[in-house]
Length: 459
Figure 1: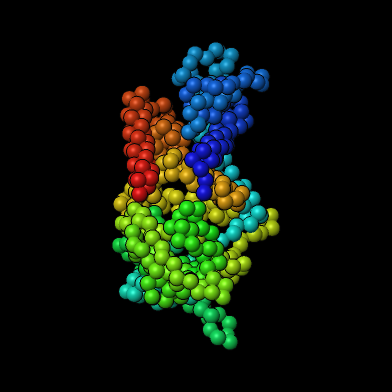
Figure 2: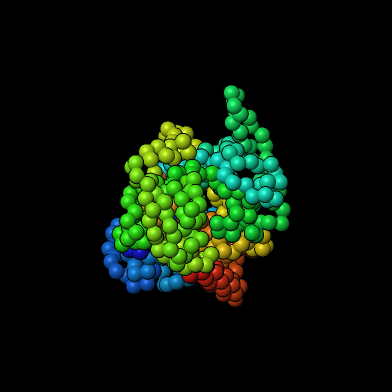
């Protein structure tokens, strides 16, 4: 598991990189059209390091607050500009040039996402096959005819190989005013898998289904997982299991006289007995033993549960049959990366719109704390997971900045379009009102984000 320090470092590295990409888009296109760049800063606030370079003596900075950045262009609205340099001022450029400079930041974020996804697909994306586990009686999944053991092979028109791609596809169907259409295969003895379509009716459930972690719960099924035998693996030093004399390799036969068939049953029995002493029957090599174990009581979201500090012993190849990997040659990886970036951009826009109209839970809004946790977690898993994380955040940054909200690139593009249609700049009052609305919306968004982060931390 990632430490707080690792999460913080991964978060800072990710945000600094993505902000640098975004601001470099503005910087590069401004330079392309001859607009003078005064400062290119990664971060806000106090300047920690700076260097001037180039014919324009542009100042390149690293600043104290690594949650953003900016490019400062020569502009008569901000400072006095000499007559000789007026032609290089941003405000003197044609509307098309100003819009190109504004659009470049978000565009570079989307291009970066394509590159990150391409590298991710070339490196290989490990995952779990999308096989259906237990289906709750009377649930949406049960009414649609989904059965335990079915394997999802397509969501809508998109073929899927892993639970990650299946989940993204299901959310996309849901936010496109689904039902969710699944093609599932069922292995029939002595025959090739038979494929049938299952339609999950989700009308009126969008808000519940889009709450974090609730998609499968509300649909009424679980992803299938192999159930290992009840064999003890690693023990927590000084934990109840070790104190009672348990050893790695012990097979649990019964608890308080009740037979134990697999690890899941063993875990449920322990969880149901917090603070109790239990009699455990074990098999160790050719010998059977009876041990008394004092179960520790631990607080959780579900109340007090039992724990003894013992992990499962997984045999080599235990989960091999369930593993899947998406790995492609460079050209196909680029194609799939482009499609994934487009799909994630559309999904982000749908999520935002459905949150605004109340169809999607605002609990999906994440702030810096949650993003930092994901950054650390993905970095600890491996390069493919971290590249996927960078791509998702880069898409979010690009799409959000294109929203028509004053203070964002999209809002400034709208101002420029209005100016082109009007034939003159908007009045200072109109711009001031727009800025106040933009600040209010951003503060509201930040409030939701921090509230959700704190709620998740507090459980």
